[in-house]
Image (tube, rainbow, N blue to C red; front, side):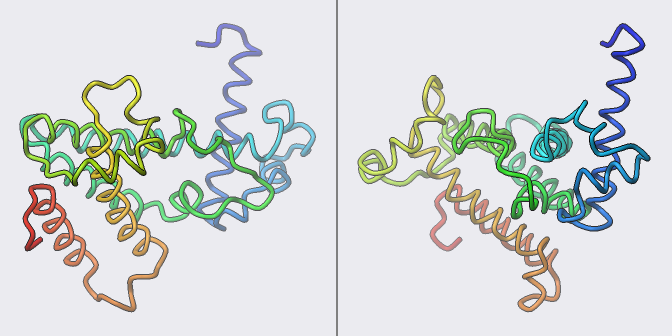
Length: 234
């Protein structure tokens, strides 16, 4: 906790900058987030912002990190509202919470998981262990590991995965006795399909196909749950 007036003022200023950046994001989308626009909203010079953030990249990275933390809290809260002995329902609860948050925060979702903001580069190296996207996925991956432990997860044959994909999955498996490459592959296969459906809806690419997105999503979740258990009809 900040102990001096100067430290407290800095914390307050940083919070205000991110608040203004998020307000601009909501009203105008990711392209509206710029140091010039933020300084204008706050009544300060652009150069003064550099006391708090070295670049637009740094500010966007901080804002994205805060948004991922918010989404993470929502996702974990949905998971923890379901008993631990029902991992399938916990996964479905997280998926619903993830979608709901995205629909309620479309512009924020676009900043987090859409194209980069003009003038702001990537804030993480590909594959970085603390990448915020990976941190959200970890909540789902943990439940897949639990499904596997309980013998409730049908995974693909190991030979093709070990032969071709294992090196690219090392970041997930290394140092974790509860994970094996086929479990991670099963998670990634399911997650990309689920995320794809959610992103299509949030970014407005689903309306041409369905008129009831809620019903479609629930039908997909039902198939998703059946596939976890290896139901070929799902």
